Length: 352
Image (cartoon, rainbow, N blue to C red):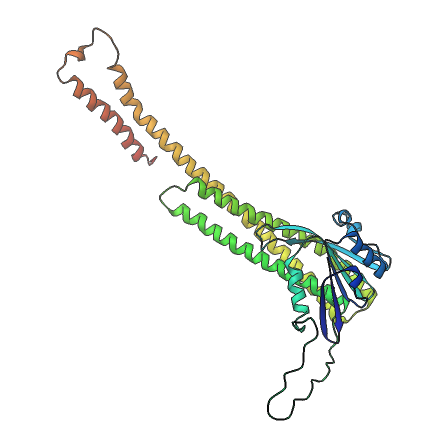
């Protein structure tokens, strides 16, 4: 699937889901999603580069993710996606700067691409063209036509940097949601510990599942930030060679600072996840020990009455108590007393 973006003055027009034959040669941004071999051939013919395969994008060595070839600069990063569907995952996305054109190659659908695309095409009218003139008034002289804008449209460099900025903003929002979820989990854990009733196994299982999901998402985000942290110095080197506006270089430096701060925040979230996990496991151990202690105390409490009942349950002929009138009530009272005294002793020792 191919989405192409062309610039007219300061306006950006989106050509969605076009065929390779409809690909405009003046496109400044070409977005390839799950491309077919025919679409890859069209891009290679238009830009004079070799589009990396899906297997090449998954390679983890830096030389396979950040390199220059055939006049194009190739940068691959792993981005998190699938958050809105509740199935988070991450996959590689390749940014290619070739001439005055940026090409993005992806087999996933990160939300950040849709957000940036909508932001880039805000001035586009509903029919796909540029913004129309204001309607004519019924009374008075007609309004003057708008003056042509002197603002320059986005370039390939600014689009690539804008995409990366949106990706980093999205990751920051993701980390904020993870932090909020961990706060709620911590509240649930310590609230359950303050209750007198024991927490059910299903509740602990739910807490562990939530902790596992938050920890897994934080780990994926950390790996994604690591790939972006390696990408930005290479992008800075590419921009030095392409000599864009000074403002774009400053934006790249700002992104590098943001990534470093996000890495520190991810480390904090990882430590917090570990702390909450240890706390949950400790709560489970405490409740299990309390249950085992109850059974142990019950067993010790019933041992003396069991001994008395065992003695008087023996089938010997010569037992003096068999002829006593109060033998049976005395045995019952003796069993009750031997059960109460150990419990009182345990209570005195604060074992109960």
